[in-house]
Image 1: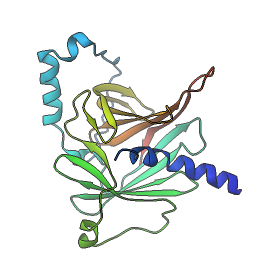
Image 2: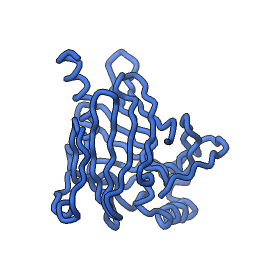
Image 3: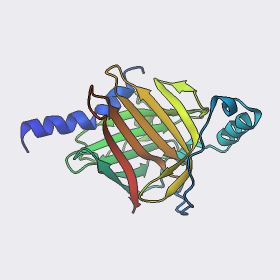
Image 4: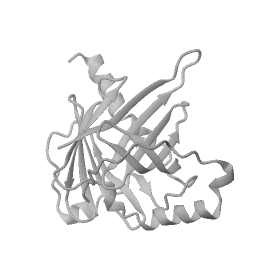
Length: 230
């Protein structure tokens, strides 16, 4: 592989992670009928029914549900970039720490997550991770926080670590199935680009999107979307 190709690949792999640090279960495979997204307007956003809905959503959330079961491997289809398709393998180290290995065919990115009462924190992030990370509990507890991955409450317009919850009840169609009650978070970067992530209970991250607006051109959009569970 040429040096220029390796450089481009590593820049794309670390893009989401770099943007996040600027500010510092088991799957339910039931296929649901497709339904259109419900538009949230200013009129109904703060209504009593909407507030009750938000409370109900958060009451039902256990942060551990945003990871797949131990040993699960998910395949993601990618668009607009050769490194957008990837596989993600989940490895539970104990009831609070989870490894996720992302392999895009060119490199492997390892992220280690810690699940707290009100948030999920990334405590280790390493590219070119070809060796299994199997630390002791003491070593895990000594890892320092890098950035917040997800945080409660997941109410609309709530912000954390530079991210904003833009929806917590979206319906999202993927090659795997149609997901309901999807939580969507978005971050605007200093260069004008945006990152958006979609989370489903029982699966975790089911889609990610990077969008860059270019003057006098169509926006450049790179997506990775779940399509298969092994």
